[in-house]
Each structure stands twice: as structure tokens, then as C-alpha cells.
Image (cartoon, rainbow, N blue to C red):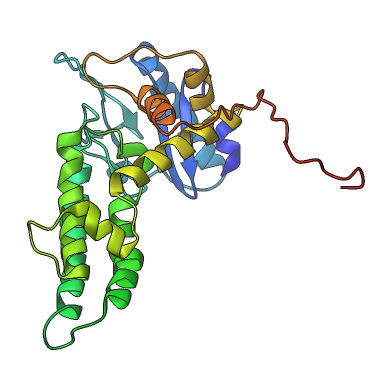
Length: 265
């Protein structure tokens, strides 16, 4: 599968994970996308495989109201346009607001909090230690999966996830609606979802800085064009990096240790 990268045109990016392949291109290279699909068909023929046109779709991401109409084909079959594609479990919307993804996360998280409700009920009355383990291992992973990507959503959208998390805190502590959130966080010794979101985004941003051959490394270095209203991933990560007062961790940065190590270490 890794040999697919060799047939992709320079202006088209290929995101490959196991047997899932996504071709990414800008408006200037949309015509090249069809060439890549043709080359991909030839590659599958050489390896005695067949592309499934019924399971292949295309999506357009833009803030413009004038969306072009593409006619992409595989084996003379027109590809269907999908407005809300799901890639590796994350739903992407045309304007990259992450509304659909957050709605999905909210529904799944609420469904899982029902277990907390049963455990904290009068019949079982589980202790807070067990409720915390259930939340950390069963509820919270759903709310944080892929958050490094969709965590740049607006505060209004992200608050939908925080409400589910605050409801879980009340289940664990037995608090009521008027109980301060920071007090329940102190009792349970749990970080806020906002702080965890910032850390994961900054961590992903730092990883991109150290991957010299990754496309995101070039975007971060070249200071990409800002979007009209919403901040992009790079701008959000840089702002969070400053708010957390973290050191510069770029590869060309060196640190001098304050510890006097022995010469044999």
C-alpha cells in the first residue's frame, strides 16, 4: 500500500491509514485529482485489485458560497458528493465548523453517562472512586477522540461537550446544579476539559513541528493565510501555547541544563 505514494501527483496530498486512502487537493489542482484517480485505477489493476466506486465519494471544503461542481469518475462511474464525510471516526463538515462532529460526540457521550447514572443510583450507590474510573475509562475517551483536530471549534459548540462533562462530575460527587464546577474538579482531582483540549492541540502542534516531511510542518513554518472569521489550527495552537507559557520546542531550539552532570553520564 505504501507504493501508492509514488503515483500521486506533486500537488495532491495522500493521507493513507491501513486501507483507507484520502486524496487532498486545493482548488488550483482539482483537475489533477482526476489524473490521480486514473493512476490509482492503473495501480489497482497491476496489483489485481478493484476500486469500489460505490464506496468512494468526494467532498468540498470552502467558506465560499460558490461551490464548483466536480465530475470525478472511477471506471466511468461518477462519484457522489458527500457533505459530511467521516474519516477515521471524525466527521468533517464543508465549512470546517465541526458542528456535526460535536453533535455526534455529544450523543455518544450522553449515552455512556447512563452507566454512571445506574452506578450512582440508590440501588448500587457506587463510591466516587469507582465512578471516577468509569468516567475516565469509558466516558471521557469518547469526548476526546480526535480532539486535536476538531478542538479548534468555537466556544459555543465546544460548550455542548463541556455540559456533558459537568453532568458527569455531578454524578460522581453528588453535587447539584448550583455546585461550582471548580469545586467538583478539586474533589475528583480531574482536569477541566478545556485544559485537556489545549494540551492535546499544543502537543499535536509540537509533533508537526518535528515532522520535517509532513505537510503540516510546512504550513506552520510558512505562516498560512488566515481564515475570514474563524482561526485555523496553527493560530489556535500558537495562542494556546502562549497561554500555557510553554517553552519553544522547535527542532532548532537547544536547551542548556542547569544540572551539573558527571562527565561519565
